Length: 410
Image (cartoon, rainbow, N blue to C red; front, side, top):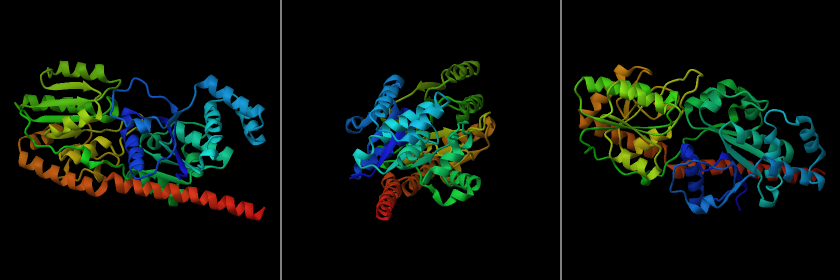
């Protein structure tokens, strides 16, 4: 029986396909943890999600139903004095719903035999898991990603308290692991680097037959993805007389601004904003591409990419990757081996790098082949999922051992 559960803020989510893939791989390996999601997805593009997994998600009720449920449990005497006191003390302070969500979930976990909870992101779900630990003694871990650790928001249960309380902190790159260990040296032994994984068989092999050459970019239309620099680089390519097409897949708040930039550079016949696409169509666009480009930058708030899943997907397809040396990207994109790295916000250098690849298909193929090899070595989801299961089960077993020891002492 699975001894650990997953807790997400929202599951499944198009922008967090790595979370779904992780759960799906655990299922494939015979581990079927309960899944709790604080919020339901909405306005998501259609995806080929496995109904067996979706039907297993327990979505928490809305605020009124949630509070009523907890108040009923309190009247029945199902809450300890410590929990009741915490609710009274917290009242309606910022983040007060995390306490109620923790109680709602925590009351249900023992009946499921759950001794450990894992959350993704050092955010809402992790804060709820922290309260589950405080109220019910069910330990927790979380996977730290990018902005949640590089530019964390300020909450009373903030990143420092989460790292202090969690029994394990998983992160996706050596860069992020080093960042966390330097900031929290007393918890360095609890920090684990486990790359996100892919089912490499899901991705077709690029054949480099596109005419004109196809530049593919994928990501949310937000500052840190650097798509404005890519559009500027496309103008450089156009002005040099190069034939190409550029497809940017994704949606986000910068869509209107990027469309204005495309119009201003007269690139309507060269650059397309395609919106969000299902994972199956993303794989098809990658396979039809010549080069993948993600010109990541550090945004005004310090936010930046850590391990963009789309780069792994491009490498799995056998495309050369052009990006920047931001976060953990250099752990994937090795200069002149699996791709090319350019300085952030340097549209000229970006344009020259793209030109270099699209005019020399032998170079594109060589970089793509090495990238695919690196993807097999580092991002195989079956191996990475086994590492996660081992950590979660060890933490769940340690909790059971501690409970047995407490009973023996009493």
